Length: 281
Image (tube, rainbow, N blue to C red):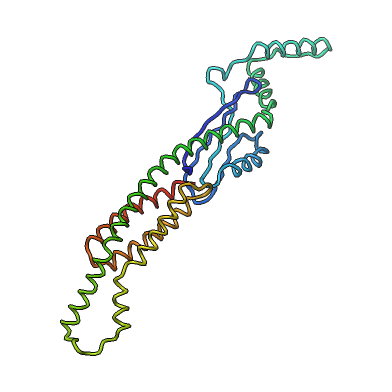
């Protein structure tokens, strides 16, 4: 189980340049990918998207690739670069060309152009993106473990409460029978013909056994999802809706206040599961 939220930032140096890859991951119903790169790396967006799709199944992914330079070095020209420029100028003068003295501004512009022309290789860029994705996935896995632990706690509490409701089923049914006998007496139905099918139909309207059975089955499915791989968030969301439907029916049909109270507690745990389903892959 993985969370959909995470953050990672990795960097690599290439030809005295530092490339950085920053990735943010947020909740989303589907897989959404937004890629930001410098203009000279636009051709790489295709394989970057493919790499993300191969590793991540759900979430909003924002990936930002950029060149990073320290402020102190922004206006610094390396000694080797200056020597290279002077050698080139000397060679050109020997060939008869008349050159004006190079200004700092012109040297800086040449230097920046030189840097941009030495782009990072695809191999090194792929290694950087792959490393960043691995770091992101690690953070999603760590948070996923925390969510999984809380979900398991919710399941345990729900199992305890549904067992209590199961034990109160007989008392609830006895209450139904008592209610029917009281109505029969108050309506003076003794010795009169009674529509048996209608009686059973009304008795069934207060019987919660079917809801308890279905609720238990749904809860077992949720428990099995804890160990499954792949996308589980959407399934968790579906089962949380089914669990809530059964609890609402139980609460409306039950005649015992203790069952209704347990249903309120079950709803609280179901809401937590529903919230977690929005945060896991």
